[in-house]
Amino acid sequence: MIKINHQVVEPEDLIQGITNNEEKSIVKRMAASHASYEYQTISQLKFELLFRTNTMKAARELNKSGAKFTTFRYAFCNKKVWDRLANGGFLIKPEVRPSVAILDILKNGKLYAFECSTAIAIVLYIATLYSIGSERFDILFARLYLMDWQFDEDLPIHQTYGDDYIPGDVLHFNNPDFDPKQPWWRAENVIFFGDDQYYGHGIGIRNAIAIINFLNKKRKPDPENSAYLMRIITRPQYQSI
Image 1 (spheres, one colour):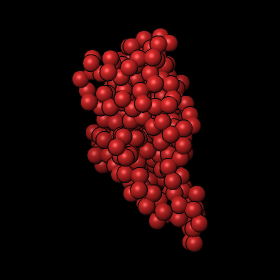
Image 2 (cartoon, helix red, strand yellow):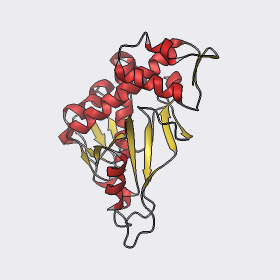
Image 3 (cartoon, helix red, strand yellow):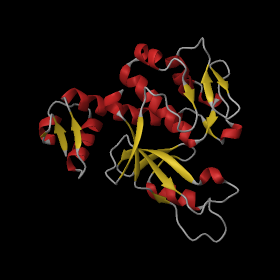
Image 4 (spheres, one colour):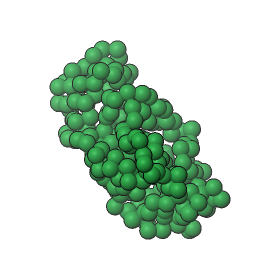
């Protein structure tokens, strides 16, 4: 359900003022969920809808960018924009604007390679830029750092447990019997689009069965357990951005 100022709001009342079809779909899914989505104002809900649609937009763009999948050990980036650190992370050069740096990954994707958790961070930072604008983004993320699940305090992230997946959520496929020689396939972090579509860096935009089948091919000999979609949901704290 959706609550605004502690009052349940019917999706029909909200949809009347929404023209974006993806946002309409998100509202309907929230309203039908057993979870409660609560906001102080309608503006807070609208910002979350914007951010979620921008998350999906950023995921589609990263998927088309030409950026490659690799492990932290072999990660690389555009040296004109980022310093590649020993741990495989990317630290923005002091003279480069954060908004320019994060969009360079889309513009010059072939100059980049990273693994799937860093890809999720990139998607969420791009979605943030699209949602708040370059001026504020450059102020908040002056020393932008891309590495695994390490997020700037101005982009707070939290996890919850359940199956009330909403388009724009970050979800996780687990591969318990992964091949020890390919430990990077122990899991795949994905952006959920709805309608059984997910973006995972290194896999592309595919449905759940395709992702599970892909991960099952990356298991140890004589595996006992299939890969599966976890009941863990990772989301930005939209109202804190």
